Image (cartoon, rainbow, N blue to C red; front, side):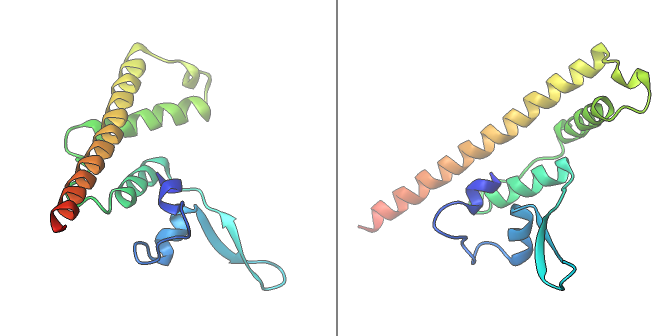
Length: 138
């Protein structure tokens, strides 16, 4: 989604402010030892990064709003905690994957896919509406 926002012939400056462009690029800026401005990679927390990318991508679709009240967002964050526990273990038990972990991951995976799919469908429907309006102008 972020690459799509940044893609095409140049960045649409009227859609994004400088901070949003830097976040889309996952960059931050600092000075090197010669006092020159340089960019550096910026780590963004996965959950916040996903919400940001989806909101920016869907900015042109006024009918879309990410619903965080259905329990899916909470499950998605639980999935990330399970992932972080396994990838960055602090104890041997952190490698253990229980049946409940698999259920949470499956539920989170389905929610994530549904969110992305429904967002894309919403965008297509909005674009269809805009095309119909433009055709009616002729």
